[in-house]
Length: 173
Image (cartoon, rainbow, N blue to C red; front, side):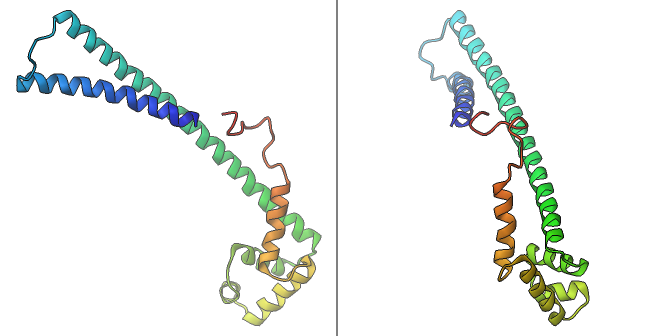
C-alpha cells in the first residue's frame, strides 16, 4: 500500500512538471497564449517545475533502491529456503536409511520426473525404478509421490527458515 502511494506520488510530480513544460512550449509555438506571463511569474513556474522534476528523480532513485533491497532480501530468503530444503532432504533420507540408489531416485521423484525419465537417466529398467520407489514409499511411510513431497513441504513450513533478526517482514519494510 505504502509503495503504491510512493510510486503514484513520483509519477504525479513528474506528470505535472512535464505538462507544464510541454504546454508552455506548445502555447508559445502555436501563439495561443492570449496574455504573456510576466518574466518573474514565468521564472517561478519554471523553477517550480524544475524542482519538481528533480524531486521526481530523487524519489525515483529512492524507490529503485528500496526495490533492489527487497529483491536482495527475497534472493537471500530463497537461498536459505533452498539450502534448508536440501538439508531437510538429506536428514529425511538418513532417517529412512535410503540406499544411494534410492536417494537418487527419491530426488528425481521430488523433482517431478516420471518413472520412464528416471529409468532413462539412471540407465536402469522401469521395473527397477518402480521397485526403488516402492521401497522409498515404504521407508517414508507414504503411499506415493504427492505424499512424499508433502512431507518435505510440511517440514519446511513448520521450520523458521529466516531468523527474525535477519530480515524485516513485508509489514515492517
